[in-house]
Image 1 (tube, rainbow, N blue to C red):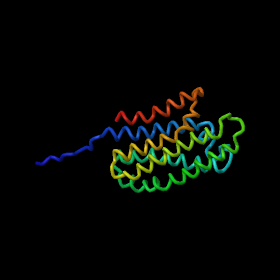
Image 2 (image 1 turned 90 degrees about the vertical axis):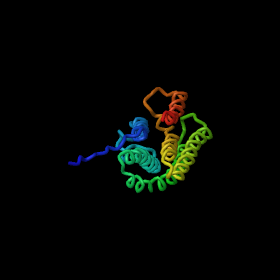
Image 3 (image 1 turned 60 degrees about the vertical axis):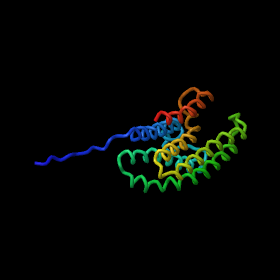
Image 4 (image 1 turned 135 degrees about the horizontal axis):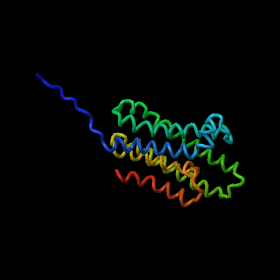
Length: 190
């Protein structure tokens, strides 16, 4: 009599860590934009104009994408991950254009923040440049899983500044800067 051997796939640390990082990023975005966007009903939210609505929709789509992709890998759905990965090529260029337009739109509308436009542009454009560089690099090395997933998460972390700045904590630029610098350090623990 033969006995059947059932092999269960071994759970790798990456299969827990990267979906958890996606969920952490999603949580930061939801908490940061809860009042102004998610709780307000997303499409019904009273945002300044249609450009900001479109910008929000594409950026939230990216955050959902980065949350779903490692979950697909962790559950063994590699083909789905690769098919959905086409969005990883399409979304970033659109996000870059929308990000630039939204920065200029904010500067045009800003009358009371007290932040010099040059400083605002430097901060946001630096975040966008990091997103572009890290994400593009991540796409280039997509056949090297270890590098690909780290670069995609790091690229996404680069654009979390606006969400972090809106977290329900007392506003302190050092705390915001500290959170944004601490997030990439989590990658080094794996």
